[in-house]
Length: 222
Image 1 (cartoon, rainbow, N blue to C red):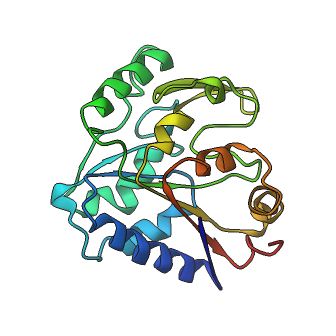
Image 2 (cartoon, helix red, strand yellow):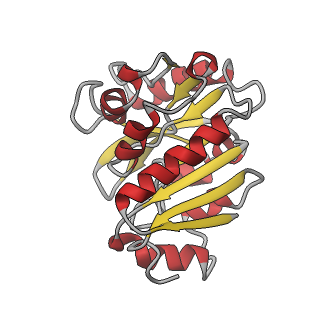
């Protein structure tokens, strides 16, 4: 596990794009795209990088149970900041299906055809409660013990999320955690210093090559 700290959010985004460019040129065929707000600037940086987009398939470690054009959809953010600007193939969960469990099952089947050697490079964020993807503390998806994509009820937000399970994420060759902002400082200390088994720490404890990229505010308590 490696930790790199950057002085500003802009430097964090550029550093993430630098590392991802290197990793994606090492033979990966799939690239898992984090949702949320922090990756947006890194995706914009990636637009102009020398990435072998023509041999990659992008996918989503999690998605909110909202229509594809909803402002909260991870797909919409990723399309606007990256996917619409580079010649890459991507597959996303179909949130227009009748229920989240069906959508998760259909997406799992689609991913099975892509992950012949497991997920390649996966970019993940982390919330100030220690969640990553849509693996929130105390939720049912954390108890799934097989590589899978599942519907996860998140009572904190009274909503469904679709998410890769811990075993699926741990099969990645490389995981990059991208974390910015002072609101994450306390939970990062709990994860990286105290080894508290919050979801992000559990995912990072697998066999993947893991790098944590942090801005100075997020790293304040390390």
